Amino acid sequence: MDIATRSIEFFEDYYQTPYPLPHSWQLALPDFSAGAMENWGLVTYREAYLTLDPDNTPLSTKQVVASVIAHELAHQWFGDLVTMNWWDDLWLNESFANMMEYVALDALQPDWHIWEMFQQSEVSVALNRDATAGVQAVHVEVEDPAEIDSIFDSAIVYAKGSRLLVMVRDLIGDDALRTGLKNYFAQHQYANSVGDDLWQALEDASNMEIKKIMHAWLQEPGYPVLKASVQNGRLILAQSQFFVGQHPESKNIWPLPLHANFATPKLMDQAQLDLGDYQTLRQAVGQPLRFNLGANSHFIVQYDTTLWKDLKSHLADLDAISQRQILQDYQLLAKGMVASYADIIDLLEILADSHSAMVTAKVYEVAHDLKQFVTPQSTEETALKSFYKRLSAKNAQRLGLTKQISESNDDLLSRPIVLKAALYGHNEEIIDQLHQIFISRDNLLALPSDIRGLILSNEVQNFGTKKLLDNFFETYQTTSDPSLKVDLRAALCGSDDQKFLKKLVGAFKDASLIKPQDLRAWYSGLLANGQGQNLAWNWIRDDWTWLEATVGGDMSFTSYLTVTANILATKTRLQEFKEFFLPKQNQPGLGREITMDINVIENRVNLISQQKKAVLAQLLS
Image (cartoon, rainbow, N blue to C red; front, side):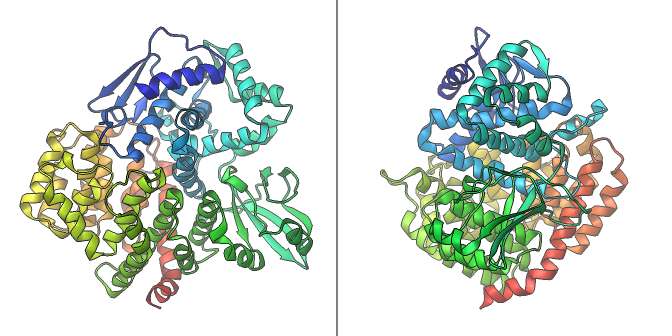
């Protein structure tokens, strides 16, 4: 209620356009496939995105709930008061609401530093998805209503689209954006609009050629890598489309806002650019030369050896957004096999003791990628666990398990990330401390919510009994606390008890045990568990007809394929995926996803084949 009330007041002021209805109702639904829906005046939500215990809910969950509420209320103007003319301009609704949720929360809760959450959630997923050949553009043609569900690609229409709008805001400034939006609403309220109507309003307010710039970004899928190199003493920039996996030849060129830490043209709209004598530039700026400061523009940067050595030696001194950005860019370059994961390992060690939650989250996201190179229950995995234990030791000691009165929001957000890494690293002290907290409380809701998921996972993995597993699953079905349900599901999916895992799979089709809205999370959690992958993978193939009949008409249906492709990692699984899904390629909404996901799995298989030896050598050294 607090976030909803203040969001409406904020949007009225920001848009300089009154909220036009006499009420705004927020309604939680017990089983709802979407996260939320912006029905005008009656917004509907999953219970997990509306109801929470304010005194025992982790900050990360509060931020998610607040962002969903702000997103749906932003839609009361973008989507309801003014509605897209047709589905090809879906971004006009979703990309804007996605950006405006962060603009609102930044004003309403400045202590949250919500744009750091934007870097973690939106930027990361957009860059990863948008690097795969065959991905849709933000603006996508829709010829048949049967195609509509398939275009709700959250990584593109929501995440990438909102990042492009952040780029526009950065280019024209907040005052011009607000003026443009006010005029846009005044001209198109209670009517339909197309994307160019918005660009025209922003052009009139900013005197910049926004339409031309944004057409280049919205109409084409993908994004560029900006290659910065020193050639014959000159600093040379070159851009080309970046891909992860097999791809066709591309000659796409984008207008890039360079945002360097030294004087450059505002936009680079050619394939190559000579910026002048490198030593002169370096000496003048007095620090490593960098591009895309603030990470507001949708491209990554590849520095040559000269520039990279300079940058790496100053990595620990950079601000948190820059540290995360550099690690993220390097991670993508490794996925694209332009760089190597083996070379990232020492970057993780440089940044492991960071006090920034956004950096810490990225460190362990990249560290998680290393798991694909090791065989479960092998000396390789033992070496990786030792690496995790070493990586997390200092911050685990600093943060402890107990919330401190004076600690920062970064500490609150970092604690579960660091302790999860320590748990994977089999830090015996952490394992015992988590267990002691568990046995000291008389019910699960009395556990500290910020680390409750880890406490439950620790019990399942290290102290699991049949009775405990059954009790946890029974509590999952009976509790009315949605965040406790999430913690229990994550913990139970990590079990190695085959009999119990079979019981879980047997519950997948029973809506009284697992609601259809939660089924994908259970499936993907079990698929990611090496002990449960066979069960989950066999289930989706054996019960595909049932799954299609149950959730096939839902916009999230294709995401079952997406989460599957994000986990499978062997030649055998690749072949099985092809055999099962290729015959379904002509089904409405599935063709693009199947093609992309085959590419995703193929690239992972090739990546492991090419980089495993070097990664293991680095881990075992």
